Image (cartoon, rainbow, N blue to C red; front, side, top):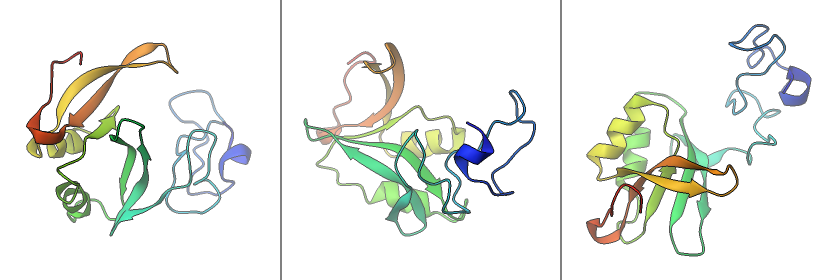
Length: 140
């Protein structure tokens, strides 16, 4: 994705990221409105005070939280959001790349599982907090 396709602003444009020049590395920028809607996902919205992201409810009653972004990292908003999740519902956070978020999920009873992602044709890591404290095996 080029800057022209992404956001056209200096905040999000890196002329030489880890790949070829001209690739926008900040697909989900929170600093400007123009790149919050992308081909990779919906516009970021406030999902809790100080927390941007989105959720995806599933037919089985579980809810995925594919993206969690703190407006002010380090002030506890993401932790408060996670603490407030309904314990009677199954919550899933896929592809966690941030070790701080990983620790936050672990401390709140989430366990790492593998799930088959049909869209990608591969197993993906998903942090799951199931109802009644049931977490299942690593390949459930």
